[in-house]
Length: 44
Image (cartoon, rainbow, N blue to C red; front, top):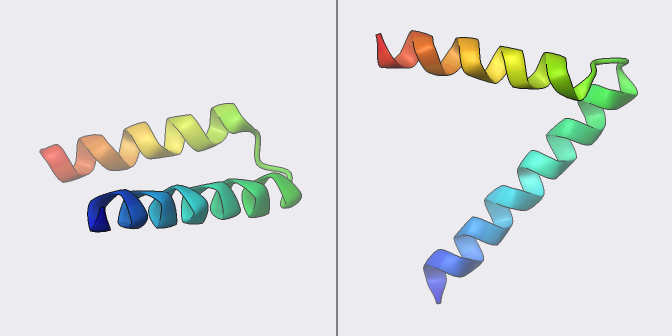
């Protein structure tokens, strides 16, 4: 049950971050590209 609550909390944070990015004029595609670049840096 704790994991579900934690996951929902993280999902809510992601939603809020995406909303804020969109308010700044950043597109969903730009967000995806940024996340892919960041992920590849962490996996290197």
